[in-house]
Image (cartoon, rainbow, N blue to C red; front, side, top):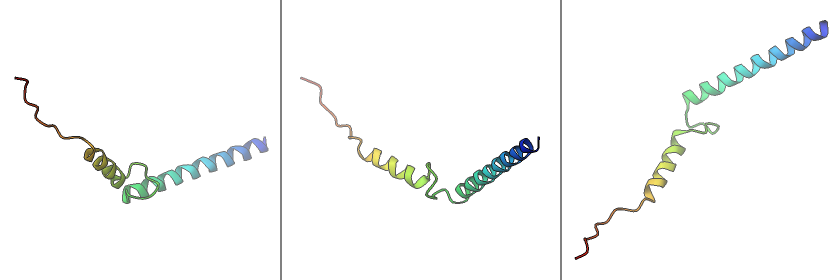
Length: 66
């Protein structure tokens, strides 16, 4: 029974450690959204949106056939 208790203690410690690591990462992203491990950083999203908008052709008027 002691081995099972040790295993549960180790698993709980790992889960708590992962939760703390996740909270640290989320707090870092909240304080600095342009950090390198943020997949949704505002700088990258703005650059992608500007690139997409620049490639859109402009509408031109075509006169109706006579």
